[in-house]
Each structure stands twice: as structure tokens, then as C-alpha cells.
Length: 335
Image (cartoon, rainbow, N blue to C red; front, side):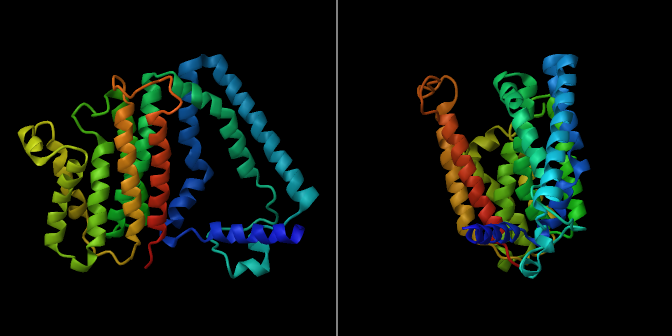
């Protein structure tokens, strides 16, 4: 029985380990660096302080410190005294099968202090996150919107990175710059940033445009890059806004000029290959989710807060399914 479980454990580890790709290694190394999370912790403390005051913030900080200390020391007890189970990078039979990108390899790995502390923090802050989302406040909406922007900017920016001479460091710097500037700007304005510019909606168009550019690499030319901008009008039409309406209200839709941004930045023919069936499945699922979401907005006859079946809930579930398809799409990329 134990041998079977260990075999399953190794198979699961190798499956998860080999999901990674070299093009994303540096990005995830930075994400998992402990100092990278400091701005997030500072933001969470600020939100707790703003909502609950100084006393509650001190309680949260002390509780979090005690919790992390407890999980860290408990993990050390299991790792170095009770189990002493070697890390996978210390197992000779796994060394040739696994991807290893870390700077070093510790002796023992069960159970992970980092994983235990992160899970403890997630469970501890979960109720607070629920309260924040349920307050229907400005800052709660700001945080919710910012999280969506942090997600939707990555795909089209990654495509630009693959079709340009950017280094990984440039990609990360541009991404972080967009997020920081947007978060501050959004705090002092609204969804449209005070200039009728919805970055989330525009990013969907830029993602679709950049994917078309990547797909058309066999016909790569300056003309393809130029005409890719017109794909944005197709995306607008899919959301119910047609060119005639756009040009009749050009002051409102001035941001269509960004449709040509991917073609402008994409100065290098992409070399990789992707399985586009996953991307199409993701888009179909997302548009289905968006269609259902429209029936869950306030004042709609199908918006029934007391019903067990909520359109907004279905929107979240289908969006998660779409995200999984998009993950498979990018995972399929081969040199």
C-alpha cells in the first residue's frame, strides 16, 4: 500500500513539475521570491487598517506572526526530526526526469514550511477577504478590479514579448509598471480612468489581436502587422458594438487606436507553435460566460437574488473553465 502511494506521489510530482516551460521560469522565480510579496502584504494591512482601524490591524499582525511561527516550527519538526524525507532534487532516480530551476536544494522537504505558512495565511485571511468583498465599498471594488487587470494584461503582453526583442526582465518590468500605474490611477478615478478607457475590455481585444498575429506567423509581413489592428473591430462586434456605432461616437471610442499596438510592438516573427483548439474552447466558454453574466446584472428580469441559481455565479464558474483552457493553450507552446 505504501509503495503504491509513493509511486502515485512521484507520478503526480513529475506531472506537475513538467508543466513548466523555460520561457516562464524567470517570471515564476520572481513571483515566488519572498520579497516580491511585500507590496501585497502591505496592501492587505492597509485595507484592514482602513476598514477596521489600528487595534484590529495590530491583532491581525500579531496573530499572523504567531500563526507563521507555529507553522514554520511545526514544519521543521516534521522535516528534520520526525520524517527526514529527502527533497525530490535529492532523489537520484528523479534527477534525470525532473525540471530543476532553483538556485539550491535543501535536504528535506516534508512538509513544506512555505506551503504551510501560505495555506495558513489563506485560511486566516479568507474570512477577511469575504467581508471585504461583501462590503460593496469603493476600495473593495478597486481591489476586485485590480485583480482582474493583473490577470488579463498577462496574455497579450506575453504574446508581444514572444514577437519582439524583449528580454524576460523587460516583460516583467513593463507588466509591473502597467499594474502600478493602473492601480494608482484607478484609485483616484473610476473604471474608465477618467478618460473613458476601460483597460480590461481593451486588453481582451489586444489579446485576441496578438493571438491572430502569432497564428499568422507563416504569413508574417508588415502588412499582416498593420491589418491585425482591424481584428479589434471583430472583437467589438462579438460584444455587440459594430463599426458604424464606433465611428459615430469616435470621442467615446477613441481608444481603438490601441488595436494597432500589438502590430507596432511585434517586430520579430514568432518561432513557437501552439494548439489553438484550446484557445478557441476558452474563447467560446468565456463568451458564454459573458452572455450569462448580462442576465445577472441589476434590474434585469432574470436577476433574482434569492434564487439558488445565480447568473453571476455561473459566470465565475465558466470563467474558471475558460482560464483552464487558456492554460492548456499556452502549455501547448513548443519551440
